[in-house]
Image (tube, rainbow, N blue to C red; front, side):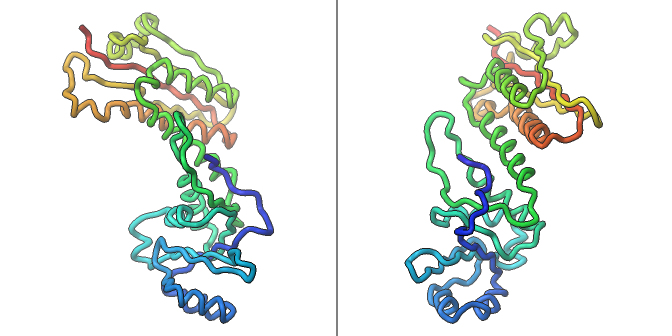
Length: 286
């Protein structure tokens, strides 16, 4: 998957975002053949709809994404992501949105490109977007990359994302951005006065640990703490199968702060960042 903007290209297909109440005005401003084509295809500008206008050579002259009404738009966000899934392969240049909305919709477009391909290649959306004018492309790409990291960590099953694996993910992130990392494992948790982390994870085959990552040397101090219970059987009070179904996601807090840390470090924000992840597996003590 590629969660980045396409390089600006003169051949990019114009993508016009048109609301239902603005469709007539848009058609009136177009050449007669374009207006007749849109009316003949029944395009109404409904939220989530897409129309393609051919050129004389059989290619795509322009594309339209329906923007619906204020009422339908208010029910959600990232509406342009739906158009990204419907558009054919190509590079598109966005028209018709103010910078603030273009920023939101561009982020939604990039987030829609995510697929979990940790184990096998997945089918990807092939429509790519040029960064709209007035949009901070680097910031949007950093947010998308951080979100993808969070989703990947949560989606990897507990068999491959135990405390040691989560530590490995932290170490990879630290190396990528030049951060330092220290880890307190096993009995050392008791020696350094972290008895609760030790108690929760002591029955697991993988030792409990506290991961401490630091980055940045100036600016305000920001500390992020994320719960890293990689799986939770319930410990002494063993959960039934229905209660264990979502326990793999009990490390979602750790995944979230690591995704946020990725965004902060990629953008080089002026912060002294510290990330604390207590990583354990809460197993039944036999």
